[in-house]
Length: 330
Image (cartoon, rainbow, N blue to C red; front, side, top):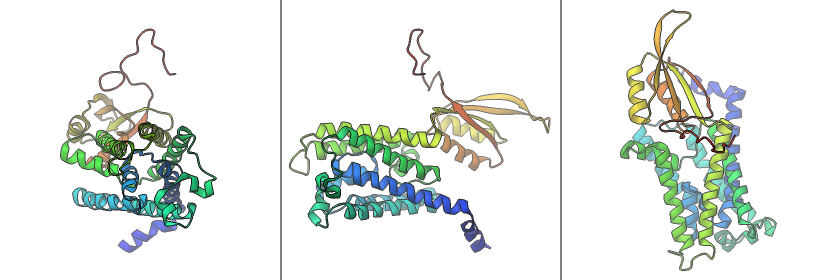
């Protein structure tokens, strides 16, 4: 019966479509790194950003190989700490992407070890894709392509590992919020790029445009994150949740202690049962909504939840109220 339950989804179109999109997203993301990020020494955070930094110190080791060096220990650690909650999709996506990057690197550069080590953009596709004279355009294109790939993968309930796992570990052991943990991890990677590529530590010679590369890296991080967010949630901003559950005590502890937020009880009555109960009114950021959904499922699988967009949220923990003459984006 267990084997049948495992193989049964393989007969559905949705199963095959989901896996196709995961590998497509990983391929798009890998292509973005190989064609627009790695050759120009941008460091857009994450394990591949650290791979770019280390490749400049150890050019014989490719960026994708460094991805394996970081991702595999992180995933093993996460499985030990969190009890194997990382699914097959995340594991395979994290294993496929670095290998695809290494393979594509060998295809788009001349069959010469020195060319693959240098990642010189003038050699990329025989010089037909050399954008060295327009780095701003290059980082924007790279950010959009990488963000598009990441967004496709995340929409299929998978990730490529990396700083997501670091954020979860920091949240568990250091009490740091998940989003803050990711920001700290990515910030460390960008600073490493500044020290190694910008100041030349470990290289003996700093890049002529080292400071500018750091700024381009920050632009890349911002744009790619916006692309991912748009793919996941469209143009919406915060999320509004209406939660009906019997497990109010556990949900209250999670919202106040883990999310570090507050919520409001709204007295309601079921039309069919005619029973009175309290409904939780909760506003969270876009990054937190998936965490809240998974936690609600863990606490009360029978809960009823409605998630809707909250385009403007004002008050403590969100945006300040606009001034009378303040210009609004909309």
